[in-house]
Image 1: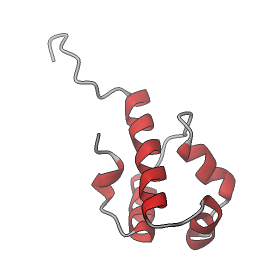
Image 2 (image 1 turned 90 degrees about the vertical axis):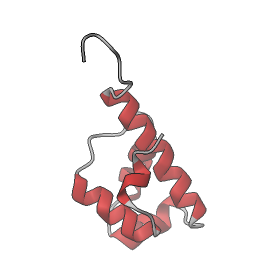
Image 3 (image 1 turned 120 degrees about the vertical axis):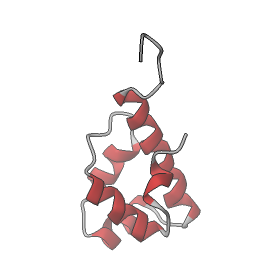
Image 4 (image 1 turned 120 degrees about the horizontal axis):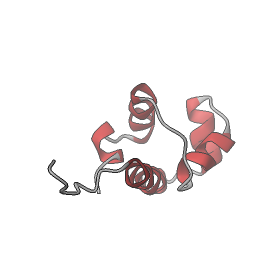
Length: 79
């Protein structure tokens, strides 16, 4: 975009996702352990996702998190 920064860098997207995952999980009143159990995944994965060092997340995983947390997938990427 002709040198104009959109702010949509991979680290920013990861930070936004991490922050929103934690916020949405807390809003639902779930611990990391409870969410991991609900999704049949390891709690360590939830911990990584909620850290600012989170790995890449697949679209279908975001959809699964959204369903488990009663949220829309887009809510995970909103700043």
